[in-house]
Amino acid sequence: MIALVVLSLYLLHAFEPSLRANFLHGAYPSAVAEQQATESFEMVLNIIRIVLWMILAIIIIRALSVFFFNVVFRLRKGYEAPVLIRNIFSVIGYIAGFVIIFKTFYPDVGLGALFTTSAVLGAIIGLALQDTLGNFFAGISIHADKPFQVGDVIAFGAWVGVVESITWRAVKIRTFTNHILLASHSNISKEAIDIAPRDNLNARLVFFNTLYTDSPAKTIHIVREAVREADNVSQKITPIVRIRSLAADGIDWEVKYWLVDYAKHNDTDALVRQRIWYAFRRAGINFAFPTRTLHVERKAKRDETQTDGRGFIDRLSAVDIFAPLSSEETAKLAGASVSHVFAPGESVIRAGDEGSSMFVVHQGRVSVQITDNGKPRTVAVLGEGDFFGEMALFTGEPRAANVVALEETEVLEIGHQAMKQLFDTNPDLVDSLSHIIAERRLGLTAKPENQEDGKEASEGIIASIKRFFGFD
Ligand code: CMP
Image (cartoon, helix red, strand yellow):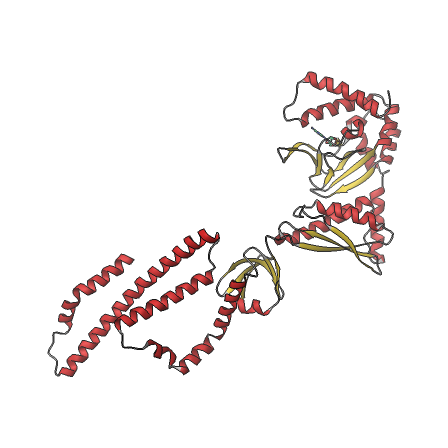
């Protein structure tokens, strides 16, 4: 493009004498007419020259802008120059270029006078550009103050969304319904803006309530543990659970938690509420609602503690290690077991914890995971009728792995006491359990050892189970 413009300028310069001779060769009726023709010719030539020089100037200014803002600015500051600053640079460059070129060809014409004397023109332009200029100056102040950046979540008026770009005219925001909102700078600067910066630990409050009969200390503990584990909840600050008011229907609570990515706060709020629901259900804590809902809650509570249903007895009698038990023993075991429901992604067991009970999967699936080089590795997926948690229960060692619900999962928890009673009447149980524990231990190590080691381990485990349950 530059070459084309330079070539045109050169050709114009080279052929000017012959063009002049060609166009002004006729006989003019008077000297005045000849002078008019010459002036017109000169004017056309000058306009062509000005246009060509202007094109050249625009190309050079653009190249300079790219050099300064894309290369120098980026290298120095580490981020791209704001669009507004680039535009201002270009506009000033174009005006300066035009004035210099124009003055070169018409040194006697006062450009200043042209711009300043026309008051009416000025007023018209001023009125027409009132909004644009207001926006422009609001844009300058937003660029100078930098109250928010691309990626921050901002809320103003009725709008909330993630800032996608900031141009010289408007801020482009992606709302949480995935729409694009273009908010002009002048609109934004008139409102109070709520900003959640991307690189800041932003907090959220989620509200819930409980009955007056539920212990506040227990509620605080249960909710804090349930919330701190949820995805996108920051591990850096422990969630805070506190009473907001002692209301007519029950105790009003709030949990304050901090997010890793604030842009996902709607999903995280929902997950936090879900986790509170499951944790409440397991802990037997009740949400406080008006009386008509209380009736539903009573029913739910009965479900939770139901341990004598045929479902549980059938489930336990289908577990291979309990197959030798008599039907009375199985019914007794079902009566002693407690059902718990876990949300998808929730931990049922955490590696390293103390454990005094084992679990049978009644409905759903769980994954047994260990941490391998800092990353979770699944060693087994257990489904309905499978059991877990027996290692810590029978040996007294800390939990050997994490067990996480893969979907909504109901488990039956069997405690130490219930198992001890079974051992008294079924000594063979110790044997079959020790084999399973030995096999599972092998599965936990990255490189399974040979069968001989497995056999030895199994004998060692039988001894430690007997010791732990006081049979020796
Ligand atoms: P416990 O150590 O009490 O807690 C974690 C549980 O994960 C453990 O008991 C076993 O029940 C279970 N587990 C550990 N390793 C395996 C494995 N290789 N296969 C199946 N289950 C396992």
